[in-house]
Image 1 (cartoon, rainbow, N blue to C red):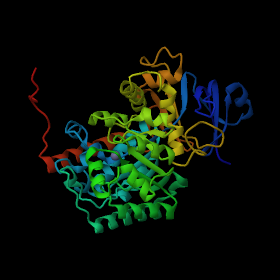
Image 2: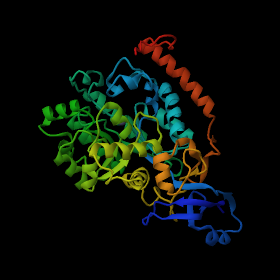
Image 3: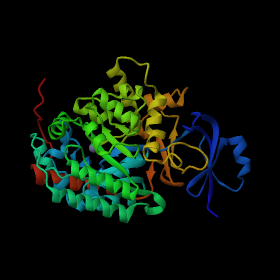
Image 4: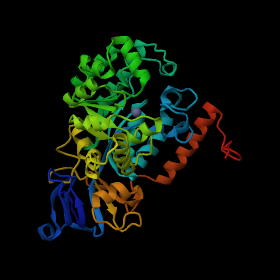
Length: 456
Ligand SMILES: [Zn+2]
């Protein structure tokens, strides 16, 4: 018999179809799944033999689903942030082909541990060296949907508006992705699943995009992609095809409810309609878009009924911060506070993510039969008090440090703020050493010591 656990006394924010919040609630977990949800007074007596976890004074939430992550790119953090634009097109930042499989494994372990400790129970991850990458994610214990970064364009010349395509490169990377799917899709009871990861409509030629879509269809997995990420992408696609990025993807049959399209910042009205009509998931990346100096037209997309989820990309994988950004930046963008509320952000970070992955039956809310991917958040924190509406308090005043415990598939991976699956101090120190070495090799990096050139 699988073990039965009851988490009791918490305020349970279910994100169920009625968006129920249960005060003095209880959630019963058997094995990996939730078997009962309700008032503690009703549920507790039915499970007298269950292991009891007292969660009084805590919020119990579904774990966050982060739809766009590159775990290993935290190597660019700090220096890359102030350079502007995406790091992947630069030779003076250690990333991509400048990293070995082992570099990727080490940096990815840091990114995934961070994502999990900060409340993401599922991440949608895409990077080079996907088979080394997935090993790191499997070890960390996070639920992950993984793909290879597949492109045939030379990424370093893209920055100068010059595109050269190498069919052999595209073939090799797509084959890597196919191997990844064959070896890892469904690993550990489905904790690790896979996608196909064509990088973008400009960096993957039309032929490669067609083959990526065919691979996704053949293997029954979804697609991870960057779409409408820059003005340069649009110019290249327009030059190749006479179409916008989104219209080009529609022509090729790439759009659809199994596609998670990251960014979607550069769209026209027809693009927005096509994304909404095709049920493509728009993955909104508010922190990284704001850092780059632009924003996706999220109010317009939401108005059209498009499916909009959330991700962190190469920023800190803090989904509470990301929810807050999503609300604040879109209000600033739209000039009104009327249209996006705290609950909208919470839905984007949970149930919409589950829908994007075709996993609504398993993930994204606290309901009977779903997987027990849960967060416990302390309510007695100085930044949260007074808590009158727990959802608004979480989105407007919450911090990742409020997260007390993380459960994935019925097992605690973080408990009482301690990561249980590996030693986080070791992960951090190994990644620090590796990042310093990579930056020194690629850009002659030395630690800051003395004047930084700031004038006032
Ligand atoms: Zn990205």
